[in-house]
Image 1: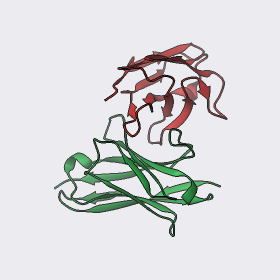
Image 2: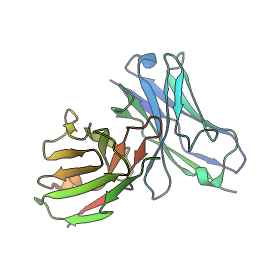
Image 3: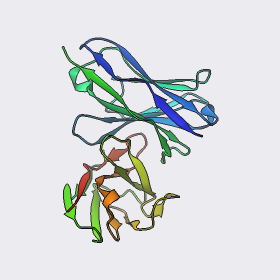
Length: 118
Length: 108
């Protein structure tokens, strides 16, 4: 059974760093893209970027380039989304999803709430 | 950047009604459009891809049409479990995929 299990909710202060995870199981992790989507409180969906764990090909939405880092570990079958210096505006739910082809997700994680407040 | 204008932003309809949502792209995106359903507190769920192709397992009351800049999403006979927010998303311009603003569908 394909599963994407995301790490738990985080409460952080502005300026802190954070790395959230998306643990994949039930399929060949290197063979599928993993994408990330942001949903700010009460707002719509925003596409952050995508990684192919097999060759580390990463594509960022230019709006998020330089603001976050997407990575993956084939050893741990886990994708990551990372911030070096959080802002209050990073407060959101972040979803990961598996993409058999780069345009179509099929399985999603349950979402990780990141709350950034002083 | 390609902008996606979705309407209406909210919609209230009764069980059995036919419901239509539209999505307008700011430039030609061919058929590179998907429709998603998001129930409260849940991850989005892909319903339709390439503008009109129903994802396997999605009920046939859902359909999509359009190409170029104008797209429609239809629920032919609304069911109580269809209460959700629906989003269109263009994927013509990787990596700058963009979503519409969403349509919140309420059941009367």
